[in-house]
Length: 240
Length: 330
Image (tube, each protein chain N blue to C red):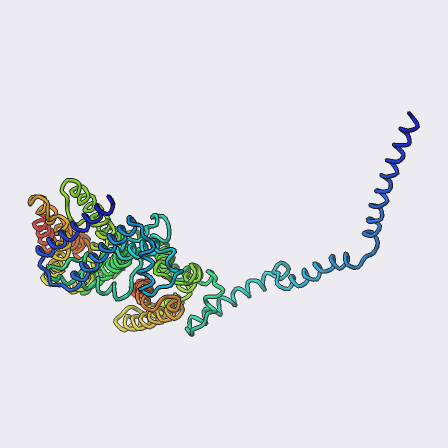
């Protein structure tokens, strides 16, 4: 009985070893220097190298800032020469609008923080009017069935404040010379020109995304928006 | 057969109502007649559909279709298509819930020429022409009310500033500073008027419709739309107010009031016509008085801010203005 048991265990052990030998053969194959496995390892390394060209992790901070500034400057040029191009629409950013908006609001405030009772537009009011206004105009164009995306429209509306910001700078320079009839006339002309420039540029970018029979409905709020900003710039008078 | 009977009865009632309305209003307007024709057609189509459904005779309808020359594939979804058509014809859209973007898209579903004709229709009162029935139908929009209110707010703020500048221009110690607080005040006043008054009116009309079976009932959006467009006449009026002459200002208020007030009264007249005379007078006078109060309040608030001026000679016009506004309000 014992012998037969032993025999059985030996045969089962043999089977086991045979299996093991089978696996051992497989592991031998994988351990041996095989080309496809190496290839598998080496391919990701190559793609990582290709990724490194686009990654901004290693580049100096100066390069990053300069590249972004160059993109912003290119969009400024697009606003100043409003051609029918989609560069302003394709890769939007909100740095330019933020820059323009802060500049405009700071210049409109004009250091009147000390006087409480006068109601000239404060920083927060200008800031809120610009951002809230462009959000509402964007929502309006989306509700009317426009095909432009939300941030693209915000980007266009923000960048098109540029002529008005330039007009603000000109107005402050003119106001240094005094505030008579002549200076008012100059300011009026400058603000009117920049207002029509802003409206024209933003319509050139925005109106194409609308159905033809609704273009006027989209353009009118934009007109109102820039008109109000232009009014704020025109009526600005620094406190002495 | 019961639903078809009720639909037939509804159709009969509808025709009767239209006849009655037509005889009362005695209008010879093409648009209204056209609408009536369309509605009748819609109702006949309703009854036709219901009869075919109840009779349920597919072979007959198929024969008719084949005779009409339509292909076989289109017939399988015939009842669905028919119901779609009736839905489109009756002007009822599938209403999305109000928190979705689609719901607001239906409220901005207007074209340029529609907005133009609506603004014109709210300014020029045409005798026996109902603003809702002619221009809005079942398609009230929020575009017009919103942007008309926004334009009015900035028109009030800007021309108020200009008028205060013109008034103080000759004074030696005066230095012009733009008053930005006017924008906030005007926005609060205009938008609350354009929202709260329609809300109150809508609530009142729904309540009265419970007690007396009125033929015409307006939805909340229709009332908001009517009120928003009725403010459009105030935009040129406010620009006229820049000219510093009290007589001209009151004239422009009176003209604007007569034009848009009569449009408002004619619009809401069919909805309250069946009510008691006392209530009709109360509602109509409330509508008109609130409309006047808005104009007079704007004028008093933004165009005659004499209380900030210490000089005595300017106090007299303020008294005159305030007493006039009080007599108008009472």
